[in-house]
Length: 116
Length: 141
Image (cartoon, rainbow over the protein chains, first blue to last red):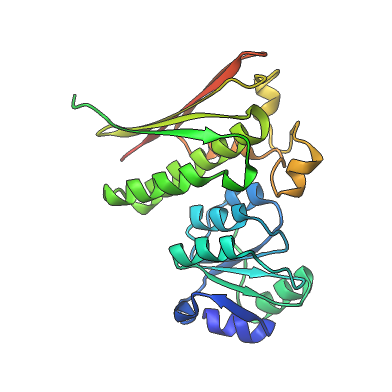
């Protein structure tokens, strides 16, 4: 699924790296626990989270994730956006809750990763 | 055997917002060396978890990454409280982290298990009230 479609499905606002909206995501992870995100490698993944701190962006960078979606209208700081910009990670925010945001992406074809 | 390339980092334990900076840097350094993305990811995730652990449990420490021809060694050393029961600490879900740490998205008891998951070998030497040294090895196939 293109990042652009994710933006449209979630009615999200893109906050940085808009030039990468045509990148393709193959999996997603909805989580506020960063160590759980780090536990399983995902392919070109999207991270949906309600957690706001720089470690969210660093975790995504460690996992080579391509997009972060902040749910529940959470807004990242400028420091976080600068970090994401440095690494080419698209950041967006939406006002949907985690469950609904994940459900919308899943039901439209972006399935999660199988646990190995 | 040729000398390893060594990267040294001092991990600041006073400011959680900076935790992970060294791991982001090592990822950049390893990319410049032309290592495979999978090896880079394994090294940086293992170091990242260790770096976070040092900040939340031990007020910081040092990290040394040694790049040999056939493997990479990560040595994390701190002067923190030590690990009372290493076997227990290796169990997924076991954590002694504070509620504050949990509210920051860590302390779920996955740090050491993740470090083991992404490395080929892990050795933990810990003495209570003295400190901990974690040595990890990732083979370059």
